[in-house]
Image (tube, rainbow, N blue to C red; front, side):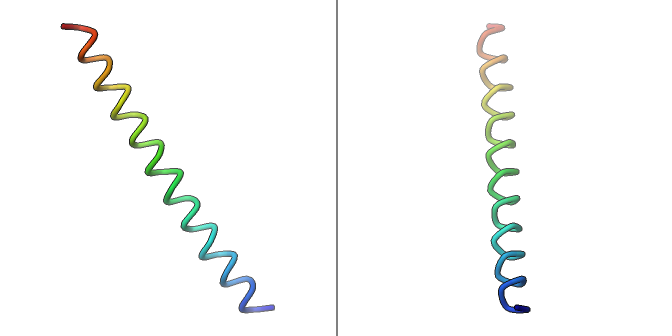
Length: 39
């Protein structure tokens, strides 16, 4: 049972990291698009 919890926790942490990376990428892309549109 303990092992399963550890595995799920690790999987969740990786999922959060991926979500944060995706959000950061989206934000940077949006900022870049906004800058390009201004010119």
